[in-house]
Image (cartoon, rainbow, N blue to C red; front, side, top):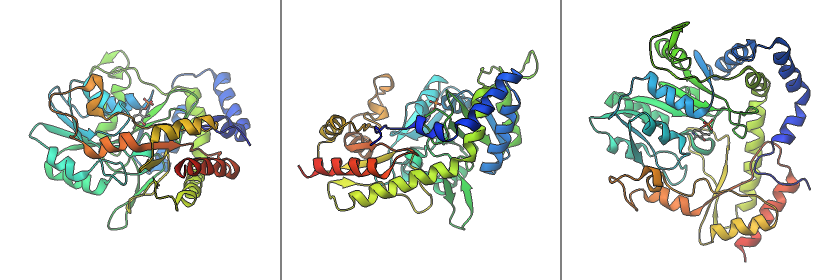
Length: 376
Ligand SMILES: *Cc1c(COP(=O)(O)O)cnc(C)c1O
């Protein structure tokens, strides 16, 4: 059996090595390392794939979120509502810009932000909502967009974990995740569903004015070279990363289908085990399984992790600590017990290896090992 990894980037690369190597070589040959043709080509390909007017490439997913908030003109003291159960970057940029993060709980079955909790958290200072499409499925965007419209708020989608997922509205209209709110943000960190060979990110919008603003912000706030209309940042997707992404984008649907097949295999394997809750997908979205995350009932999650480690099976806890309990984000407004769903998830979730290269032998071994522990 091949060694089991949380993510098998090597196996994935070897299958497309020739194509990727040739594309990287092209960049090296033309030496247009910054803003070369590969960047424009990938940008256009991604716009077409997502069916969105504008993709603004940038240096990473965290920058994408930060630039989105800068482009919307959010100011110190403005409140931004986001989820208590996410990777820290989402809240980090809110805090970094001097905005006030307002945290709300998630839904127990999908782990995505609870729209009812969002609505309750709105105050006259609220300016934006940042739903996170956690682990690969979309948050309830139709509800969130309705709430945003009613209260005149911006919506920034954190799509770092769900690129390629599709949201279906009640009238049957379908849109790609990240293209529904005012701005969508994604990350091309190597282990993401569409990952490059270093850091990378992108911002999506259908709004021409926001596109202009974002192009400026990611480039030191300048429209005309050496004339700075705004205070911006330096956030670029380099040409070598764009070359890799251009090739991998062609396989994204295939990659997501492989993740879905692996998830289905896990689901069947664990179906008869009452101590494990397999991931559920909301009716309005598909799930591209950035992570495959079990919720454990009546079994010690940390001992399960150790047990698996001893059998050379990596398993990770995403995420062990709720936002409001993080040392850097201590806030007198929040206390233990305020976000019961998130707090329970932090104690009971465990994510199993999930990637495009998992084979049946590996999955059988993982399933057998998890069940063995559950039945001990
Ligand atoms: C990965 C991730 C980010 C940040 O992306 P980077 O490219 O690592 O900066 C932001 N939000 C979520 C939910 C993520 O998973």
